[in-house]
Length: 418
Image (tube, rainbow, N blue to C red; front, side, top):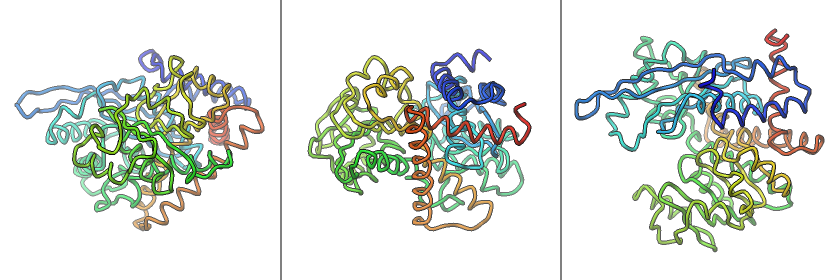
């Protein structure tokens, strides 16, 4: 178990679970069950490279808990993926799905690879082989993967095709986040970023402010950050800064997000966009904005830089972007942190919508998807806010406490906690 529990993100997550569990008087048996995943799969993924060599990449699928329903969680391709990180993210999916009121458990997967160094053909070979290795453990009623860091709708299309070929018939419900043409849901691509903006609206409302009056800084300009910027900009917010691996852009009057999106689609990175000045990713985190939305990787706000953060609200579009120590400091400074299991829940909510549409063969229009997503995010935020006010705790503890109470009830009803 040490390979699972040794990582900083895993330990940080379990400490939050323990603290929230004590607050709500959670059964020790429930905490013990939730401390470890049900199943952790490690696979070797051999790939024939374009030059004829064979390279083997380590792959993982961790299934944390399925009390509420089938396992659900993304697949990431990143050079820093390891078993402990995947296990921590799988547990966060359990808590996120519980908080959002979904009938789904938590899982996560990944391959330790830098997809930017592979050709499209090599990525396809990698995806098909990885899918084949984990196929006995996934399926529409077992475990439903989705895109994450380094993967996209094309990745899901390859996974769907590989699984269906091995099954003997098409099973569109095996993955979510796939193209609309093969059973994907309208609104799925923007869902996580849109959920970040819905959570931002609710947070600003508690400070008697509208999003059209607010300034935003968004770290990350990928699948989450880009759509958070697009949706925030569309609602009238001034997006002062965004960033990606090439650095950050800043414009004190607000970036023209529509023009920036067109630029990035052509140039692939935000660097050298003429509508803003270049700053570092670290400087972006310290800008005096109303809302800071870290939408990249975990651990970017920590005890070493937290005292430089000037935002009044932090909305976590990424998983685990704020360490536990930094979170306590921010709470003491009266900075509201909208935690990841609430703020970035839009992706899994619309993934759930997609799964429901696939198994029922009845599809919704985009307005229906967006309206249903807004309703779920708003409801979850209000539950967390009420809990935080009643118990005098921060929003992270409130979100985890709300999630754990639902899991505890379900586990006791199923006889999983004695």
